[in-house]
Amino acid sequence: MRIALDAMGGDHGPTPNVQGAIAALQELSDLEVVLVGDVPVVEKQLSEAGFSDSRLTLEQSEGFVEMHEKPTEALRKKPNSSIAVCWKLMAARSVDALVSAGHTGAVVASGLRTRLFLKGVKRPGIAVTLPTLKGRSLLLDVGANPAARPEHLYQYGVMGLIYAEKILGIANPRVGLMNIGSEEGKGNELYKETHNLLSRSRLRDRYVGNVEGRGLYQGQADVLICEGFVGNVVLKVSEGMADFLFKAITPQIVECLDTERELAVNAFRDVGRQYQYSEQGGAPLLGIDGACVICHGSSDARAIQNAIKSSAKLINRDINGQFTSELSEEMVADAG
Image (cartoon, rainbow, N blue to C red; front, side):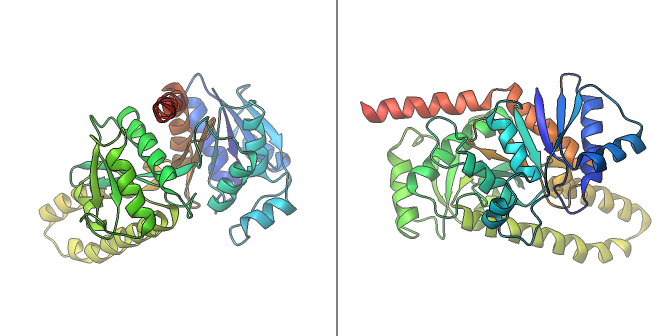
């Protein structure tokens, strides 16, 4: 497999991207990485690391989208930015996947401009994995599609169930609709229409109905779907709350007896790992003809390494083939 890595993306410049690529290549024997960015800068880092491998190649780009820039304007002014070149490589089938810790809006916008969607997919969505009292749940969309329609959310349900089963290993996953209440008829027109659609669709046996925000972490559903505006708010509030709780509890742990402190620190660390983006690597943009994993801007080398591994897993398990097959069957059923 061949993966394009946005070497210039992220808060810390090319260093973690280069280090993460090296670590991934050392771990995966069937991997090739194309580092896209300022070639002289990347070459210097590779030289300093003493790393040389024919499976690692470089692709020149011109600038990158900075975090404060508006995605569409930046992409128009910088048509050969690092993330734009990554998408061009995938559109040309020169790579199977791309990974970026750059501007999330620019990653999505550049992908939408290529129209590199899977057959049958109307709008791609970003999926994140979150811990729950019953294991893990998948939340999507968390930012790619803030103006979703019911059919978009339905497709997120289809793709989310397949991802939960094939990638997360959840047996017989259930899908819920993130809403302001669990009762019938809750929400605005988008959510009312989506609820009706899901209730009569082929997903009806897997559909648990409306799920309130608290239900996400209680594990009331394995896949929670919503439009990108709501999903992004839920994600950011979750990240902020996790950070707050960890910082609020830490002083209490320090005051514990030695034995209690060791037990508390170990439990604290285990729970914390579930929230750390470095362990997950990144969030996949589902519905793309290829694979795209979007990393946190603060990603370190480990996060980049895991993001590359995640994109490789998506390719190896032919997730897109399963998406296309299921959505094609749905279209045939609708036509009948």
